[in-house]
Image (tube, rainbow, N blue to C red):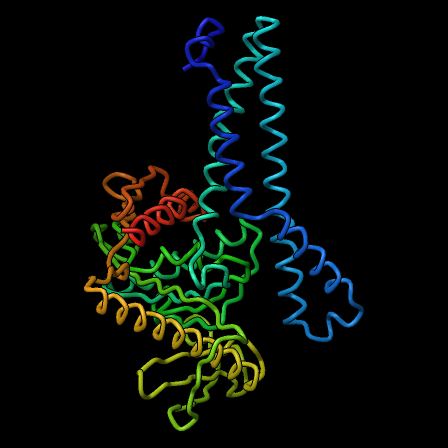
Length: 376
């Protein structure tokens, strides 16, 4: 609805701006900008070290964290500046009785509400592992070839989301299905707070559509599971007994069984006590694939340990644990088009955009929902 100059006195945008200013001040207190500036200076010195790239993995972590923190500070400072400019814009509209300027001011006010709300969600990521990078595994479930195709669609969705956010990602392993799609895939999102951001995606995702693999054009329902765990860091204590491992090597392969490597460089590790199986085939070297697979195994064991500790504490307190590992979201492409989260109630009528990585609305809603669940 177009706001007229005569309506300004009724709405009083100054009140809304003051409310946004208060929210932004609270965000700055939580983020602790002074501490962020100090960390940026320290990371800047590390990034300038001439021997930084002697250890490429550590160098990538330093530069990624530096870029993320600089982005956080710039984001806050930009919002502060925009709020100041908005006050002036409303004053100009009132003084000059300029409807176009008022319309511009109201558009900016709406945009600021959205942007400050999104930044406020970031302050909710305060869990023990929320600041970590994320390790994501996708598995096809019920639905045959459609489920395998659906798993591949989800893989693309998350990789596109990471790309849109400017986050680095790396696919460790992809197990292709025979006819189409994938049986499973494991990848990392290498950005600070990636785990805290994505952990609400853990669970079963359901797709309803006209199957492109059914020659009678019937509607098909298929399922795929998404597992999200934090990446292990050096400070974590995850002891793995070599005697508890079965390690198999095999030849990497692409879609349809097409060989992509002429040596047995792919590695599959089975942790016998837990039954966890991980694999990696993205590197040419068997040693590199083994190291990556061990990192995945450690991350999964860390998450299992965390879940067991949380369950024990909940039992001691007489609480019931909440599981998010069930069906969490429906993607309906036929007979109508909608994507709806079953926990938060958040929905969108543009599945094409969602499947192309436009996930922020769902992710922000689930972060707020998870915080409410944890505070109950």
